[in-house]
Image 1 (cartoon, rainbow, N blue to C red):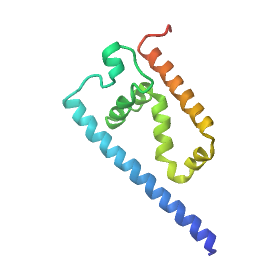
Image 2: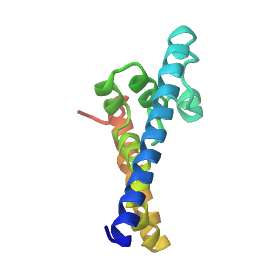
Image 3: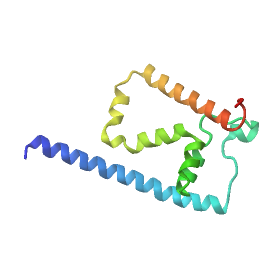
Image 4: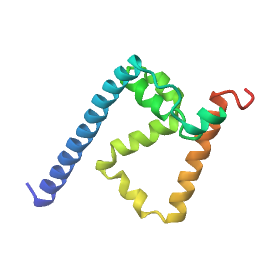
Length: 133
């Protein structure tokens, strides 16, 4: 077995362990918080939505976590699909996808973030009835 193959398989094994640890930790936390939320619902956590009624681009992110913890995958996706995509990206980052991100210029990174925020905000405005169907 070559040294390069040993390094590659070792790196993949380490990445897999980090993904499993991240996923397992997030899963346990989501289940625990979903149980806590079911017993004591704090209401709307987003300050913008609480005080103005208008959702922000991040609205639904807490619901994503709570819904996943309760096993409601469809409801989690409907709450904020952008949060789901970001979460999947962060979960699998140890496999090296994050290297692509850090190779991008700051301008490109900011553009991607701005587009994701805009898409998320349009989704939230539609979800809460601010946009016509």
